Length: 146
Image 1 (cartoon, rainbow, N blue to C red):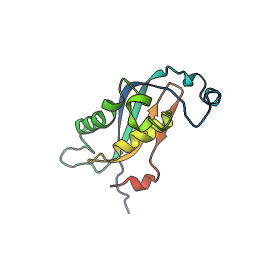
Image 2: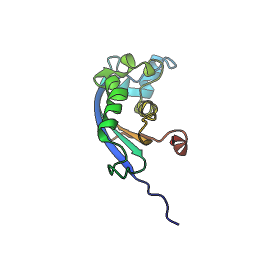
Image 3: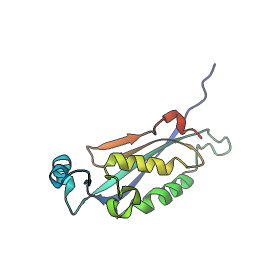
Image 4: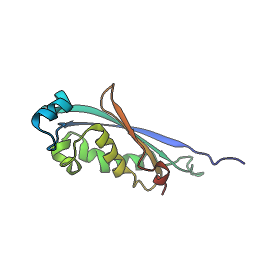
C-alpha cells in the first residue's frame, strides 16, 4: 500500500528586535547570575531568523502546497508587524509577564501561525545567533492537524 505523499514547504523570515532577560521572580543578583550579560537593564538586540514549515496536499491545479504570497502576508501580519524593530519586553504584550527568551519567542510565533488556514503548520525554528536556535512543533505535533 502506498503511503500518502507528505511534502513540506519551508520559508525563512527575518526580524530585528531587542529584549532583556529578566524576571520579577528572581532577585537582581539571581537575574544576573542566571541571564548574565543578557540581563543588561538597557536590553540588547538580535537579528532573528524564523523558519516556518507547513505541509499539505499539493493542489493539482497550481502544483503548490500553499501560495507563498498568502503565507508571507500571514506571517507579516501575525508576527513581523508586531516583532520587527520592537522591544519584545515592552512592545509585545505576550512578553509583559513572560521572559522573552528565544524559546518563548519560538513558542509565541508558533501559536500565532498555527491558525494559517491554507496549510498545516509543522514547526517553527528561530535562530537568535549563529550558535543558538530553537525549534518548536507544538505540544502534540500530530494534534496540529486541522
